[in-house]
Image (cartoon, rainbow, N blue to C red; front, side):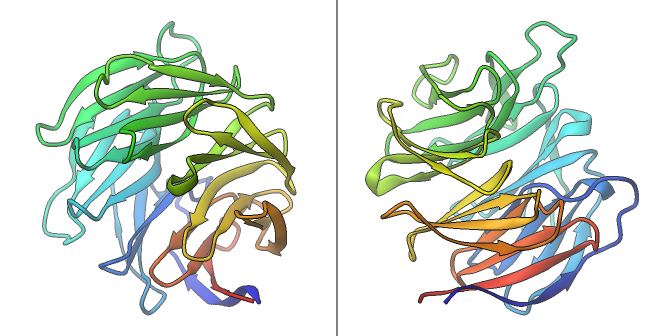
Length: 309
């Protein structure tokens, strides 16, 4: 049956130009956190009722959210103030801020190591300003700032190998940081398509799914960097999420406004589901097989259930 639209969640109107960015779900608590960049806030959605609960304010230029269920924490990348935020989803704690590189964007977390990687978009006018920062979450301190070759995009962590993978837009590549030696780039994989953007990992097969601005999805061996296959997608992508239970991959594409859905076993595109023009970001609740597409023109989330055919 594929993605079935089941409703909307109304979110606060935009306070200034802009829209939404990366989102993350705390499945056990049934909470979704989405960066509402236009409001310098993170909006919180109840995934069990698909209703808006509250907003966490004063996160300047917030670009992303990430959840650690292992440590019951939420992280935010606050691009406008070059900090990462750390707080409890219980709502009882204030947001702790840690200063990182210029314009943090992508986030990934190694729970066993208690290491948070914040990938920065940098400042083209400042030499060496594009970095990935490694934050020791226990001490709330930056332990390394690693220069990289170009503007970062999204990043993921592989718990089995202990390695972080970071997309670099130009020159197109995926760089690797090993949590066992988190002060340098351990490896870099050149990519054959411009603008690596969305990124996710399939741990059992050691494959990375790298969606590129060149309107191509690359399937990459996470150990060697070899490109295993290339697949056309409907436009310039942003967020990518893998559904392990259904072996589906969701790719958010803002223009024309669709979610491309791939079967990750056959790498066949199953469908392209209309959302709204400009809807470049999605959230995924693995516990409920639910996808949320964030609609900037109407400041709401469209809710889809993924029903196996």
